[in-house]
Length: 285
Image 1 (tube, rainbow, N blue to C red):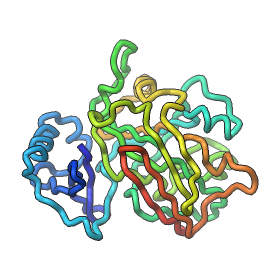
Image 2 (image 1 turned 90 degrees about the horizontal axis):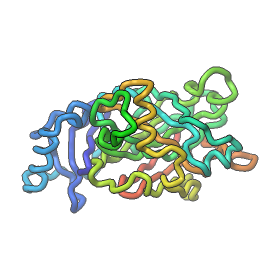
Image 3 (image 1 turned 180 degrees about the vertical axis):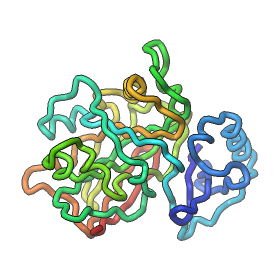
């Protein structure tokens, strides 16, 4: 299923995109798309049955904003330097273990919402990423377990980053990762049954129509399964938590000088095969 939330910011309603591309209203079936729903197999079953039976009313998508596909996100865990080609372009050694940092849940916005270039920023950068949405509580996932059994679905994430704040200002990466609007998510949450292999997905990103990133999750240093297992050794992952799993080569940071960092007026478009497409215009904060 392709689950999403539509409407004005803060007042989104749950919806489903059917196999014919028709937007369907879920308000009569569920209250929202959130961790509680993803952890409730019976509720998800009711959604699927209603969709299969053609019982869901159609919504007019004209002019309708698409919000983040997930409400009440608990935490956004991020994995840095997780693509072989991205590590090469930035001159970094591939990490021996996953690099873990966080984004606050309030950085998450809709896939087509405006993204704000922070005040004083000169190095705002783009990063298309596969987001993993947790559907079952995961703690200390064992080596003989399947970590993907804890995954409810997948989405497109844009891990917008300010590189000066992240790298040159001391401390952790968090200052360059948590600026307002720095995590567009969606358009859909695609349930895990529709993604045959999370290590076989193409990712693309364009800036002002120019292709900048053209990668595949096959280049990940640590697979989605290994990331879920690894992170669960250090923190509990709850339904509705999100993991951004890293970006492929092609970011501004890895480009020759002068590096083409983002400015107000730039337009970024990104997509992951089967998971949908985003488009953001950048404006000054």
